[in-house]
Image (tube, rainbow, N blue to C red; front, side, top):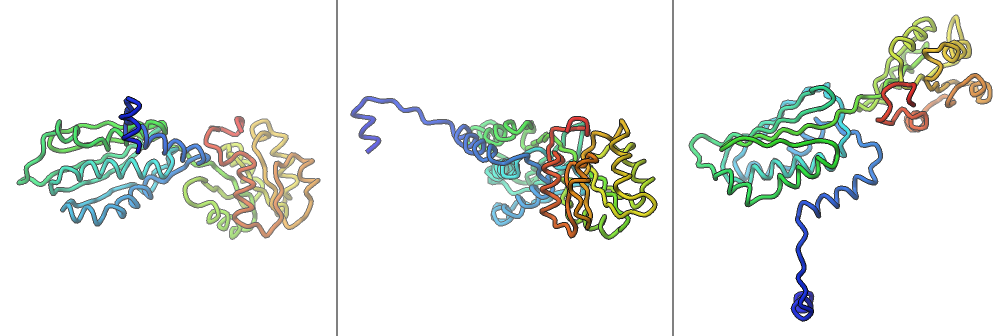
Amino acid sequence: LWARYQQTAGLIVQEPEPQNLVAAEMGRLSAVAMEPMTSVSDAIHSTLATLQKLAARQRISLAASVPPDLPPVSVDRVVLRQTLLNTLSHMFHRGVPGAIEITAGTEGRFVWVFIHYQPCEDCAVMPQGSFVEQDNRLAIASRLIGMQGGRMEVSGEGESRVVLSLPARRPRTVLVIDDNPDMIQLFRRYLGGGMYHVIGATESGEALRLAREIQPHVITLDVMMPSQDGWEILQNLKSHPETKRIPVIVCSVLQERELALSLGAAEVLVKPITQQMLLSALERCGASSGGAEHPGSL
């Protein structure tokens, strides 16, 4: 019916470029994803798992070497996976057996991902020009990653090399002040996954020294501390020019919300504290935001 209408009306309808359609769809998804923080290692390994059967059918081996301490990146996980899928599918499209190796590392404020395709030595390789012309997957991948503040570089003849540069996102530092080491360990488990870096302090002198030295994005503070209780620590933090602007979350069995707020606490959590309670409090204090580089900007 649409074709007949075009003929009847004499209309010329230009088909949109595939990369523009995909980019628009990914842009819609990214708009609803707040503060993206993605593990590059997770995205790479999950993508390889998705392509494992197709790679075996194409007689292409897949390998990845990713350091465990890579910082997360400010790229939506769906966008990064789709970029990797498009890039690898582009390499599969040659129809030539071979090997693909993925490595990753950091350089300045970026995480780089290097994808190297090596065809088997005895196999004929399609000329690079005609290969690119037949496949727009790389154009789509480049457009997607560019929308997220990254970039893609392609090189190689016969072999194919793709380098992705992704904006790194450093984890937020949380100083946990509690005389109970088990509570510090519990908060480490609660905040695992790369978004937060937890540093523990079990006594007041150490806590005040660390707060001034490391300038954490947020401090969680127990009240029932030996020698100097949490109220005194909170007063010291708020009276010192180097720490007074650091948000403090008071965590205690005592229900003294008004007292805590009057002394400058940003949030009050009553023990026992669940993971969701802690994550929500950190979000309200601005510790989940990727825009702040130091406590003064929270």
